[in-house]
Length: 431
Image (tube, rainbow, N blue to C red; front, side):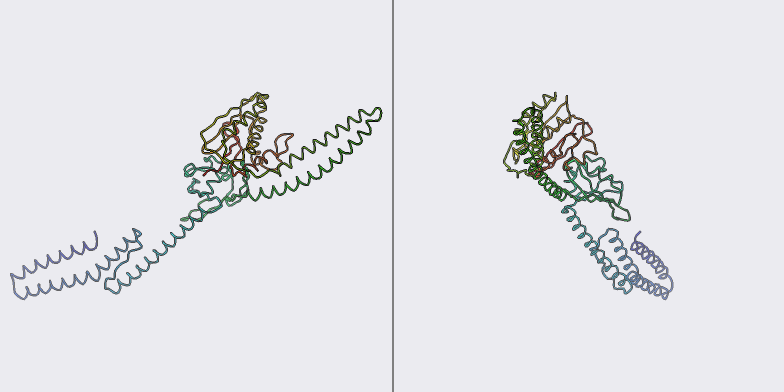
């Protein structure tokens, strides 16, 4: 029961008792009656004084406790006219003002931090104590290639993303650099912050793709130009000398075998020149000239072009088209990309298999094959310069594909999924 209620009951009981005493005194001597009346007046005055000095201040302080419990820091207590109580009221009001300012400051900081996280060029992933994803910024969603509803509340291992799987392998408090199957390179850090006395894990993901690709391209362009220059100049001189020697020996008797050797050497020099020219072509990829094109028609054209190669290997090639809008693309360059992807798929199958070309919504295409697949160790090296799993491979096919798709602003990935199928997926930027 509240203090005011108890005070009211006490006042009523005292008044009842005094009324009874008055009734008894009225039937006895007059002086006793007047004494009881005076006692009633004194009691009433004392109750008023008691209420003002004790009950009202305590009631005011109790109201302040209610404000604290409800976290209403904007309200204030009024003065009660009692020095001791007013001192407590003033301290309480100052405390409420400080709490209000602190809450406002924290809200402003949290709002600023949210804006900073959402606008950050780094991916930020925050998890709960149970390692369930509780927050992701837009850059993290883009890097992981997932939608917000597909990631929130899930563990990183349960998210269909190669980056998410790499993050779970990072020891606490450490940073590693990972290269994914979509040619992207990330510096990933796993750390934690203190919230309400508990350490909350979070991940920071910084993209190093542009910097590394620029450095790689600058390095291999310089190497290729130097090699191409030296090889072409050397082979030109050698072939010229070999031709001269062959012509001179052709006039002599019994020199046919030697002339044949000369011709073999000349052909080998031309082969070497063509070999190095293929590397030089990677450096000379032109800037794409974008124009509206039908992705289904481009896929159909490449399918027809590659049917002969696939038929020789007993590989079935199918095309599945979706209703997709026109895409801004350099048709000639993109056809070369599709031909290279299909050729790689056919070489992975070798014989007796199936390739499916499928256009995707909202705006993409994938090439699926049931070949021998790609191991996890190979995935990270796929788009590295001059890396190849083929015995006679030069390691420039995927570099060529990467360069053209990057210049179109596409996102892409190449990996073998749990169903055993290998998919090369390409998605175009769309408005």
